[in-house]
Length: 112
Image 1 (cartoon, helix red, strand yellow):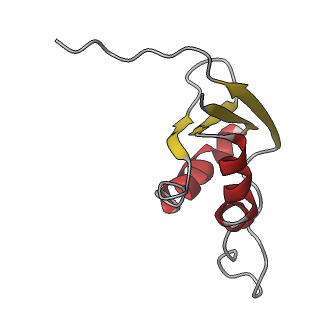
Image 2 (cartoon, rainbow, N blue to C red; image 1 turned 180 degrees about the vertical axis):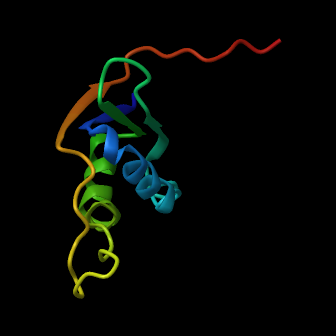
């Protein structure tokens, strides 16, 4: 069965647009990775400053392989505009926690 990784990000109100733009700018970077199945960036709608980054993988090994390769590059970020060469942009999130789950049951919409 698949494995789900949920990155729980605390993002202050003034950094929300920055976070969402960063994800939009690297959209598709994970799609072709071996074992990748699904991605969603979930924006909070009420009473919290917590974003959820949901990815689903065929196996833990696939996630680890992505993290040690393309994932590492994606999380490193590009150079900050107007900053000296190699300076990384300030993180949009003030805290991050990674949750891991195994998929034990799933359902999709019924076809008619």
